Image 1 (spheres, helix red, strand yellow):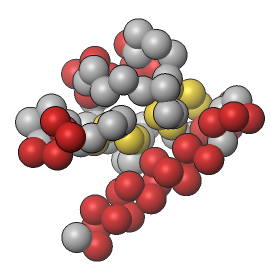
Image 2 (cartoon, rainbow, N blue to C red):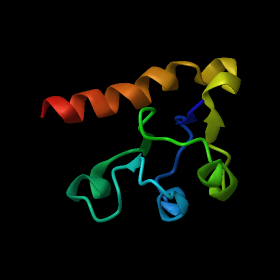
Image 3 (cartoon, rainbow, N blue to C red):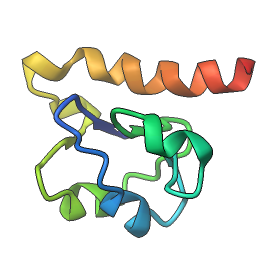
Length: 88
């Protein structure tokens, strides 16, 4: 199982600080961090530790299998972000 960041993310980077495998991007030190609207979890790297979900102050991170209906599209949005990065 992986976790998914949804559209209510406010890009405060608290989750990036607690992730033990750095699967949340863009990281604060990345150039694109300042202009990104939200953060994304790489489903191929996430180890399902739940640290990010526990740290998120606005509850914008869910287990992929338990996404509320209104946020289900974000499973693909997160994965697509990393596919696009690999092409660049």
